[in-house]
Length: 581
Image (cartoon, rainbow, N blue to C red):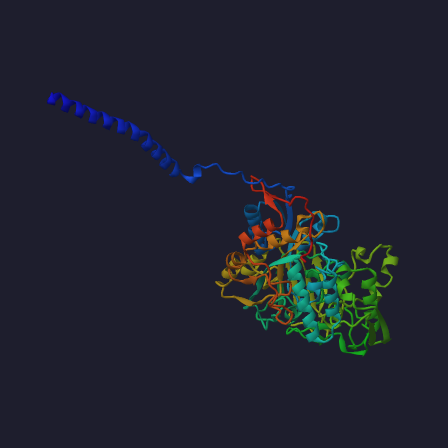
């Protein structure tokens, strides 16, 4: 009895335990499920879809024109570096067209062609007249200027430059020139890539008393006429890759090396000294007789190379003739002159429409005096439509050298004018023409020439090579050259939009250009008036710095966007905003 009752109680306890387990299992399973749900990764949660960017039109392929590797290797490489960055980082496509020389480039950006070009890359190379800031500020940027290839126009800028040109007080003019540079730094019609260190390499065993000027190095009339030979070869042999067309002034449609050579054959009224000051030349004295009249006294006893005397009639004829026939290389220098009046055989008055700060340096210093007895009436006599059509025109000036011969594609030869009041030291000057910059340098190495063109300064590699030659001398100075990119501001060009130009400018890797491409022989672009021209350069203008991330943000902020292939598109409902606020 007792045994059976115990068994019963034990069986009852087991039943209760079983019942308890059955009750607890669902509770535990529910807890585990909740714990599992609580520990699920956040990534497994569904994401809201990102809003789709509505793309504008695709930014078309940009066209960039500039110098070839044979013409200006450093700028060619800088352009390639910049184009690679634009394509890789900004999603652009660029058609790069490189030209072999300045004349070819200019012909390809003539009216009717330049409208479809987005970026023009070349340079304002240093020469004596460009120590004065007027040309670099006026020709590329005044609203109606001849070299304003991108059609930039800002009336406030025009007013500043024109007022600066009329300012006779140098300090007041400096202030206006600095203000004009501030506007260029803000509007970005162009961006300067670099200023090369000017290097003049010459044969020091062949010539001494070499004259190096701040703007031009050895490429100047003082050096070419006064350097002294050290050997029996008394001919100053000069090598260049620049196309030499003609040194007779009627063919000077734009400034070229021909113009520099012509200054040795044709005298000017004044000349810029090696230190940059203005010195008398054909003119011996000058003074303002009133606020708009400059009276000039001429040197007496001067003769043209054909023996005829040079008088005030020739001076008046020259200024009238070059202006009448619109000889492009001199039009800018002629602008300050309204008329020329002969007072007596050796006195002329220049009537100015307004005071001009450049009258002595540019107007009197750049215009070559031609003989009236040679050119007067020649168009009518030979039934020409323009005097430049006189193909066999005699090269007759009054300068230190007389023209002897020229062979197309080969070079030319000038010989000493023994009747000049300051005759040359070399017996003759020979220009030898080569196809590219490297060929010019090779001629210097093999001593077939003694001086070479500094229009396209020697590359960094050539400088290092020259340092190993004991007969070569390397003269260096900070250049006033600007190597730049000028943007097209016409409505049809993508570069018409200020934000787009700003972004492009923020991708110029100045450090790589200067350190790698120039190998330290230059400084980053700092505006059209280079740091090497310290009186006129404005150091306070802040140009865009190299920053790829900032360039992309500039585009984003302006509404630009990229497609799935990384190509850049205009903002939706795009309209070009040419200038910043």
